[in-house]
Image (tube, rainbow, N blue to C red):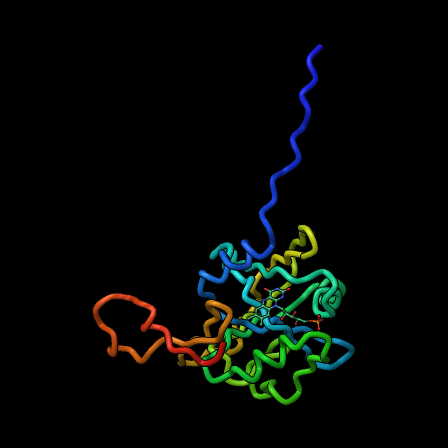
Length: 187
Ligand SMILES: Cc1cc2nc3c(=O)[nH]c(=O)nc-3n(C[C@H](O)[C@H](O)[C@H](O)COP(=O)(O)O)c2cc1C
């Protein structure tokens, strides 16, 4: 009888992984929910469109985050896609250990929404959780988009190489995308 010893999975150091991921530019969103009856939001780049029909998205949240616990309990969340001038909201939603209540940033005039809507976000998606998958120390929430109560024109807030950036003004670098196509807001 032959025994095949299972090789342990190779794992790259966390720093190498973080360095590799910093090469990828991402839009920045605030994942919103209710904690008690107060609006709360967490800054996230692990957001993606999954399917157009039915409209489905995913967000990957640290399982220990207050947002993940609230979303798991309420089975709903919102996604506000942030504009370049919403750096303060992004910082508010990513401050480690701080409360992330959003009364100062939410839009009471937005169309009907189950989830809190960030004032003047480029877009807001109101989502109902249809599936959750725990992977390592994160929970991936799949959400079916129930409504899009907010849409505004504007320039996207981008996170790239560990800093907030935005697109340079259109027309200033018309030739081909280079590093100068991104304008640094902070690092
Ligand atoms: C640009 C940026 C993107 C982030 N993306 C994610 C993400 O996709 N998922 C996640 O769990 N945390 C992400 N974080 C970290 C959380 O925003 C942050 O750790 C969290 O809000 C802190 O919550 P806590 O106080 O409950 O620990 C990101 C932070 C920043 C600055």
